[in-house]
Amino acid sequence: MTQPLIRDLGVVGDRRTAALVTRAGSVVWYCPERFDAPSLLAGLIDPELGGEWRVEGDVTPLRRAYLDDSGILETHLRTEGGDVTLVDFMPYGPELPRGVCRLVRGSGGATLVLRAAPDYARRPPLLSRDGEAVQLDAHRWLSASHPLQVEGDMVRLCVPAGASGWAFLGDGPPGRANPEAWLDASLTAWRGVASETVYSGPYEGAARDSLRALRLLTYEETGSVISAATTSLPEVVGGKRNYDYRYVWFRDSGMIVRALSRLSPGNEGTLGRGFMDFVCRSASGRDLTQPLPPLATVAAEDAPGVEELPLAGYRESRPVQIGNAAVSQVQLDVYGNILLASAGLYSPAELEEHWPVLEPVAEYLCAHWEDSDNGIWEEEEVLPYLSSKVLGAVGLERLAELHPDPATGERWRTLAGDIRAWISDHGLTSEGAFAAVAGREEVDVVAALYPIWGYCAPDAPEMRATLRVLERDHHADGLYWRTLQERGTGEGAFLAGTLWVALYWTAVDPVRAREILDRVLAFTNDLGLIAEEADPATGALLGNFPQTFVHAALLGVIGELSEKRSGTGDSP
Image 1: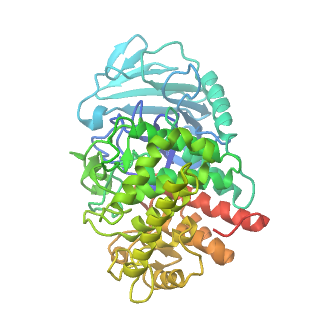
Image 2: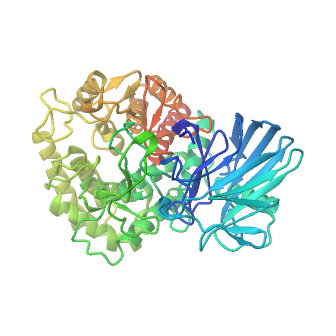
Image 3: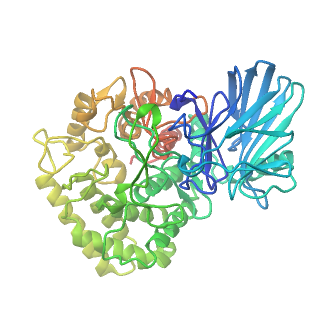
């Protein structure tokens, strides 16, 4: 198996988990039952051991597209026997079975070959007959429209030329199969979900694609959105920056719901409630005088620590990791983001039930804002990262306006003023720009968000100085890097950060904002999906995929540009 380009990947899902499919119709990543569960197919990060579900023979990709706004992918191929259409989906809806279904249509026929590798390829499949189905392990069965052949560690399904067929990799014993009915029911369910957030305006196609990506990576039971569907896709090919992004970052979630609220006026309360319900569920039973972890599992549990897997890695990029070390870090910006998102999406009455969590979060910030932390980029070195201070100030200010006790609100505003004074004294570089770390000269692209958060005006002297440094030191080919040190190391341009700069320009120069947005959109694939980073020299996507952080930033820019065009929006 040749590992696919990251941009060649598509995603199907059931809002519990997801599978990644290449242009050539190979399923190369699949974690049954839950996004962060052990993989059954992981050829994406180990082509020899990881397992895949491929179309056998000489295959030429023709085109592919999602059906409507669903998570159902239709791939058109040319095989040795003629043209074939694959319809890949995970049944989604009440009382439907769980698993991955593949419909084979067209005149050419196709042979599908499944090589399963349970538990991140740490144990072999069982491959035992169960009537007309094949049992892969204690929990997975493969059933099909035509006879299945077991050959060594593979299961083969041949759909003859001129015939249609199907295969279903299910999460339980095979029952009576009706894949066409499952497809119709799944389309109906997806249409219902898509109707909850509808956008029309500039960049409508890009917005629909990003909304679909966010829906696909939402764990429906808790409403949480994972960072990406994959683990260990490298930020530098052959390097060590390979992380597991199949978890929920509170900071990212706050940014996502704020971006969605721009596109869905009137839906803020629902979005805010879902976000805070998840935060409260994660905080339940926790001593909130202690640091809140920056991330959680989709079920609002503590994410596991890092474990390395003995897999080859994507294009030999090792280590391959599951779990995430950030769970043990202190990231003070998480607290500010929770407060900012809650204040922006809730009315005072709606906040009432969540004060038992919001108030301790705010009080922790009041007591610890002067502490150093690991920062938004989860650095190993604990330092006074400025974005943590900025978010603390604006979060306290915004939530203070909604607190039912005027004295508490005034105390929080006073603390926010102290933070602002500290930033003025310690947080500027010799050029007058916002420093990434207090007392240092480096500038961070996250500062482009400070006006969006409400910390300062877009034309404040500090912001003008910051943008000058970003343009000079962090910008090339229309894109922006996260830090100066990343340039020239193989690290790609940071696409979310590039969109944050575009978001800044929506208030100052919308034409400039559109230019940056168009540049980023050039790196989306044919399905409108995008990764964390891009190499402007080669067009390659880098990092885990698809990256919800980037899709949320893209929606934020589109929402602001739409408001500016309609004349209904205020400057951030």
